[in-house]
Amino acid sequence: VLKTQESNGYVWYSEHMMSEKIRDRAILSRFSDALSRGEVQIYLQAQVAADSRRVIGAEALSRWVCDDGRVIPPAMFIPILEEHGKIWQLDYHIWELACSLLKSWQGSEDFADYCISVNISVKDIYYLDLYEVFTHLVEEYKIDPAKLELEITETVFMDKPKEAILLIQRLKEYGFRIAIDDFGSGYSSLSFLKDIQADILKIDMGFLRKTEHQERSRIILRSIVALARELGMPTVVEGVETSQQVHDLVKIGCDIFQGFYFSRPIPVADFETRFRAGEIRPLRMKSGAA
Ligand code: C2E
Ligand code: MG
Ligand code: MG
Ligand code: MG
Figure (cartoon, rainbow, N blue to C red):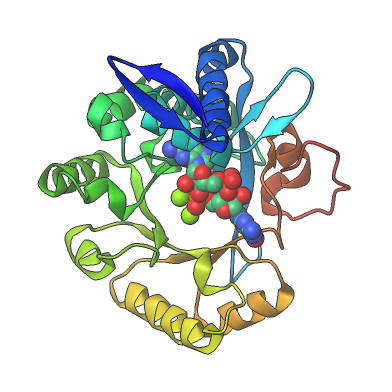
């Protein structure tokens, strides 16, 4: 057991916790540098329409690409940035990259119709006026807000439900597309559906995983898709990994797929080579896909 001094009292840590703390500090202290050096990038994961089997857009997922080529996934840094009040810096950077990409796709034959979705952290609403931020971004980059999809999870609404509902309404009225992310993984899903008029429902991939509750998962998934349809919301199912899943999901009426079966998240340049004009072309993966 190691002893460290924390503010004015003493706190005891096991060696394991200590090494975690050291790792967190290292990530925090290198993060700002990484941002300014352009090491924090977006990888794109295709979204595929169930009917046409064509790519209609992509989710922008953050990756920390170190100068030695290592790619650090968001699970390694997002919780730490959230805990230390820095997630908004990452998110703002990612949103800017997404807007700049949408701008570069404008008028292109292949990508002009694609939407890009970005993630919003529950912590962002404490640091940013999201309405100001997003409306300024699309004005600055002169892009159509309908091409930028904002993914929110129900956790965003836990602390300040009224404010959050109003915020979403205003963003929607401005023309942004609103997606509910990881639906079904939280606790208050149904009242959330009542209060938020989202454009898209992204269903948590937990319902697709093989568990002892598989049959129940399938029933719930089918009901969510039916419910979303009645509410006028297309569904995205995340985590699609097999052709069997695609087959089953088509049968229950799911609208859009996102998953390793079609593509992992890949660097923007690879995405642009692989998914021209909606077509899904096979491409031998280089390293860097994660
Ligand atoms: P998410 O928003 O639900 O994104 C989908 C995650 O599922 C991605 O993980 C993606 O790689 C993974 N995924 C997609 N298809 C499959 C599949 O077929 N099988 C499996 N096993 N996984 C699949 P990723 O990129 O590691 O991101 C994890 C989470 O980190 C995201 O979940 C999102 O909540 C968060 N995140 C990522 N980028 C950002 C960001 O820029 N800002 C914020 N605030 N959060 C982010
Ligand atoms: Mg997401
Ligand atoms: Mg999700
Ligand atoms: Mg998520």
